[in-house]
Amino acid sequence: MKSSVPQPVVIILIVIGFLIAALGGYFLLLGPQRSKAASLDSQIVDTQSSVDSARALTLQAKQGAKIRVADIFRLTKAMPDQTDMAGILLELNQVAQDSGITFTQITPATVAVALSGYEAIPITVEFEGNFYELSDLLYRLRNLVDVRHGALDSSGRLFAIDSVDFAEASPPGFPQIKAHLVIDAFVYGIGTAPTVEPAGGASTGTTGATGATGTTGATGTTGATGTSGTTTTAAGAAPAGG
Image (cartoon, rainbow, N blue to C red; front, top):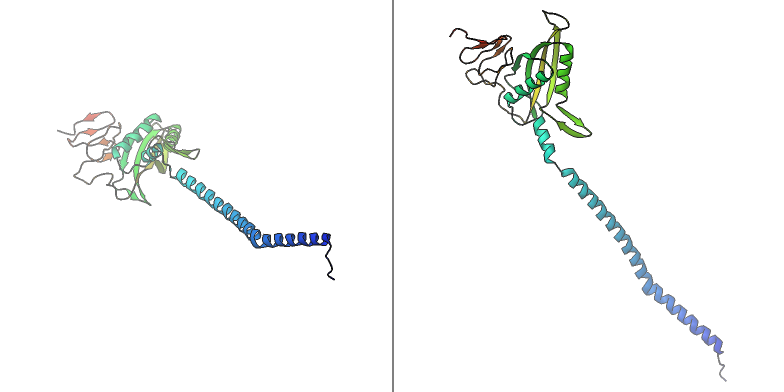
């Protein structure tokens, strides 16, 4: 006589079978997929982070590469790639005039001094005045080129004071002083032409006691000598004998 399994037991067995099948299906099918999805999510996050970093670097590079025309103009004005001695002398004379003084002598060096990527042109100047005028001259030369709020500000050429010597003028004596300065003007690049051509060539210009510029000849304390033999003195121009 066959024993029959109670119906509730059969139902329980069927339910357990379904549960086992469901768990098996989860571990065999859904589990690996969920793990793969989690791995993909992690890769997506890493990739997005790399994209954001690359985008930030690109934006930074673009901002760093921006060079405004005004910045180039100011830099070229402060340190041009040409000597332009006439322009240098005119600018120095203008700064001196604004300071209330007149150079009695202004003599450029015959050659430029080669430095790292640029050249310095020593220019010797002398004048008589007082200490406050000397201070004003130094202040004005210093402020032709400056850096303000991290940006270059240039209203003229870059000059540097190489040396300053002054003593009591005689006559009339103190508070008048006689000052002797060596001022450096700068040229971008190496191998520019000499500031003054050798003997026999045309000079870049020299200034006598009155601040006048001659055509040729060297500058002395009494003035500049031109091609016609005319000597410029503090009082004016007088023929040298012809």
